[in-house]
Amino acid sequence: MSVYAVCEFCRSTLLRSGEDLQNLGRMADLLEDATLIQVGTEGKHRGKHFGVLGRIQLKHESGVWNEWYILFDDGRSGWLSEASGEYVVSAVVPVTDPLPPFADLTPEMPVSIAGRTFTVTDLETARCISGQGELPFKVDSGYDVNTADLRSSDRFVTLDYSETPPLVFVGQPTTFDDLKLTNLREQRDLAAGGAPTVQARAFNCPHCASPLTIHSAAIESVACDSCGSIIGIENDNMKLLARAAQGLRVPPWLPLGSKGVLHDIAWEVIGYLRRKTTSDGVDYLWDEYLLFSAEQGFAWLSEYQGHWNYVRTLSDPPSVSRGALKFQRKKDEFKLFSSGEARIIYVVGEFYWRVSVGETCVLEDYICPPLMLSREMSKKEASWSQGEYLEPDDLRAAFNVTASAPERKGVYANQPNPLIERHKKVCGMFWKMALLATAVQLVFFFLLASHLVFKQRVVLSPLAEDSALTTQEFVLKSRARALLVRHSTDVDNNWLALTTTLVEKTTGEAYLGTQEISHYKGVDDGESWSEGSKDDAIVFKNIPPGNYYLAIEYELGKDRNAAVSDTVEVVRNPVGWSNYVLVLIFLAVFPLFSRWRRNAFETRRWSESDLAGSSGSDSGGDED
Image (cartoon, rainbow, N blue to C red; front, side):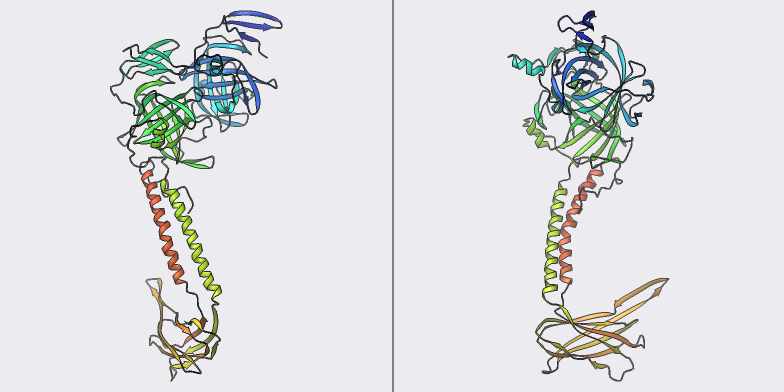
């Protein structure tokens, strides 16, 4: 139940005790900001309707944020945090676990609360600026409080060290759209026939008097394009932080003030910076553009050698140890691509923190094209962002840019492999054609009635006076497209020459075939070897019906004086498999070539990685 209220007109803080009101003094003025939320705004969270009763405004080194006091229809109260376009709905939760002192906390440190492990993501000393509306406790402007933000996959925890033991606020990240907010500031102003109150504020550079603008109260610094000075924003006061600190002047390809729509969100380019990282003595430079939306907060466009990414901060970052080679996230596998220290070398425009030339952070990039997850770590903060590869033509269309985009060079870390889909199509066509070839082969196998019509075992002796013999008779009731005669022998370390004559008993018509069978084996230097084959076959074509027998003449080699057993088989209309195998080999050439091209693209990608050669560059993200 609200017990304190701040008067909107005179800024007095009132304490309600029963039916009595006590004036506790004047509250400091609120810092004008670009929030669309106001006292009286209504919304929904997880299907529950709430109303906004009041707010606390806080400020720290990274910017300004609002804590809105909300009341649900079922009588529960909570807080809606709004900072740099990120929204969290939370409530105080009693915790009996001992919590570490604020001074012992470090970014990425695991903290156990109520049996769950959270990761420290941000450490700040915030100052309360002011309060507004109805609040559950007394608010004094100007006091400092240490806060620690912790996250897990689906929870957001804030440890408030203004009390002992610390207050624990547990909540869930959400989005502006999911909150379904109504009665917003902009809606109120437009309904009254006026202009929206959320407007850019203009001022002049205190160093060179060039005109500058501020789009949001979250903006902490502005870099002047004319003189290179960096100006800090302190409410209505402008403080020169660095005078002409930049010897470099870089004209952004996407001009500040450009407006466009990405992912159905209207954005304006308000800041530009250039970063570099050094690896093996080589400097790598890339550009980043800060985007602003009154509803969605901030986003980034990054560009490296003509490759673009659309980047948003993650409200549900993964729990991954530093230097991990890979991890799973939402069924996707992300692999470490690069890591190092990133340094800002040029800035111009507005930024939501005290930006400075020379500012550094440790950066790790994990990829699962077209996505990239990046972790940035400093002494006070560890944050994750997700980048999605953006085609240059799509970016030009989104911002109505007529100039040619920077030329793309090489393959970028999370650039989608255009050959993956083509490879999938080629593989799909291969399996269709292979299935068709198999079906045709099976038709020949079953419908053409291939079967064994004769089988007899004979012995070929080197001591026989007559090296010729005849087999038993067999009958062909109808014309045979082909007749296969197979000799399966046990010849060993010897050779065998055969002359096989197919004879029709009644007409005497004969079909002649010759062949040689040899098989040798042995052991050399302890290794076994063998060559040749013990079996061979011959095919007679277009054989008419009749009574047949085989006349076999043979000659055995002198390498071994031993009889040879020969099993003679006659197969009607044999199905040949060699053509089928040749067809499959021919068809396989296409997916193998496609796979080689796909993997060559991945090889080019990973050649730019810190882990070149160790991350399985042949993985194309699909199954053949």
